[in-house]
Length: 127
Image (tube, rainbow, N blue to C red):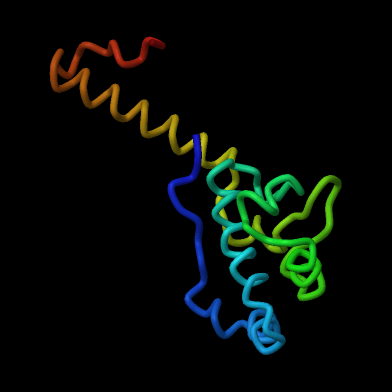
């Protein structure tokens, strides 16, 4: 399962790190950053971007990744990079899983009450 969205600060475009990249003509790196956020959210990687995703999922180059590391938007990690500050702004994959489980439980309970009555309780049984 994946996150249906990731958070993006409305001030992203005027973040000094982003402005420096744009001023240096590194638009591809900025796009790689945004696509990296989406990739991490889709695959619930908690901010980790594997090197294999760089070319085919983020449509970026090693130079783009280096620019993001230099700008301190990404941090080098084993086999790839991590998005700097991911945990500060995005929900974790563990939290996403908990939210899905809670929604599923509420749905089962609501359907049970609707179709079987308030005293049934079959929603408590694992399916």
